[in-house]
Structure formats: C-alpha cells, structure tokens
Amino acid sequence: MAEVVFSSEDITVLGGKSRRDVEVTIGSEVVRGSRIYVGDGRPSDVTISQEVLIFDLYINLLASSDEYLYLYQYINSDGVNQWIRILRLVPNTFLITVKDLEFVSGQATYSLPIINVVSLSQAGNITAQNFNVQHTVLNDKPVASSITNGDLSIINSITILPITVNAAEFDGTNWASIDGNRDVQFLVTLA
Image (cartoon, rainbow, N blue to C red; front, side, top):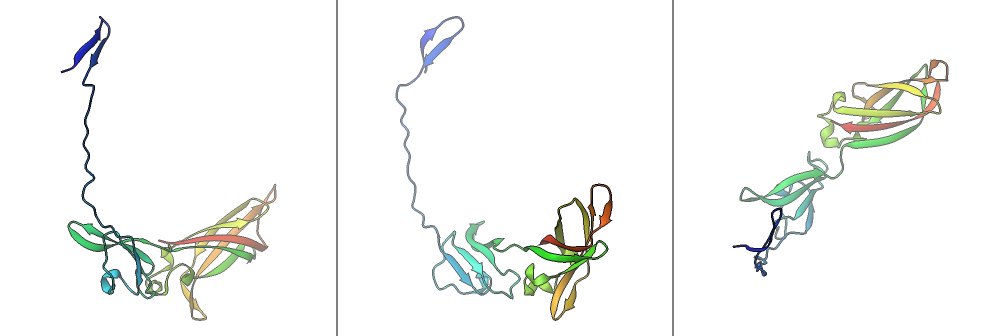
C-alpha cells in the first residue's frame, strides 16, 4: 500500500517501496547458424556435407536453374526446419547509356540483348510485355520523348528487344524532331 508523503487540496504525493528487486535469467544457450553454403541447384536438391544449422544461408549457383542466384535461409517454420527462398542476389535490372544513338526524323532504335536482363534459362518464357523500359535522352535542350518496345526477335543467334525512341527538342521557340546522335540512358527491369 502506498504511504502518503505530502498532501494538500490540489496535490497529493504518494510514496512506495524504497526497494525493487528484479530477477532476470539469461535463458538456455542456442547454437545459431552463421555459415553460407553454395551449390549447383536448390538447397533441398543438393547434398550439403556439413551439419546445417538454423539461420544458415545458401546460394544457388546453377545457371540453368529458374532460381539461379537466389539466397535461401534455413529456418524453422511451423515446427519444420526448411530452406526458405529469401531474395535474388542480382535483380533483373539493367542500366546502360547508349552513346551516340542515331536519330533520323526524331526516331532511333536500340536492340537490347535480353541476356543482359534475364538468365538464359528464363529467356524462353519471356515476351516483350515482361520488360519495363525507362529512358532519358541526354541533350542540352529540353526534350520530349517516348519509347515503344517491339516484339522479341533473334539476330545473329541473340534474342533482342527492339526499343524505339521518338524524340523532339525545344529550341526556345519551336519543337523539332531530333536528328543526329544523342546519348540515351535506359533502365530496363523485368516485370
């Protein structure tokens, strides 16, 4: 019970015990995993020669796998120890600056080899609609531009995504189609 230390009409100060005891136990010791394994395939499909501990990591290095360069973690989920896919180490993102892309009457086309964005094992399942392409035409004048992705095609045994850039520049008075060479930056991601 609290003891009244001071009291008036507006305020009351109550005092409590002068000593509080808090007992804390450290708990049981747990061995946590801290190793990173690599192998050719999913971790559930390969043999790991050492004992795998909870929180160990694994990287799939099998290039023909649809989970190539994925990072997995060995965790206990719902009472079952299992490998869980966490993330892809190299995202399907490609950034390039194409130097001196030639514009004729405001139009230029760049042929992007899709292997720069997606692994060979996934290339067969990809269409032009899977690509998100953003661009910037580098210029000393204001530019209005748009892009169009063409259908995937094969040139010299390489699957390419044709990207057509339409651009006009503002000279301070009028808009005119760009003619000549310009540097164009592309950021390509796979949806």
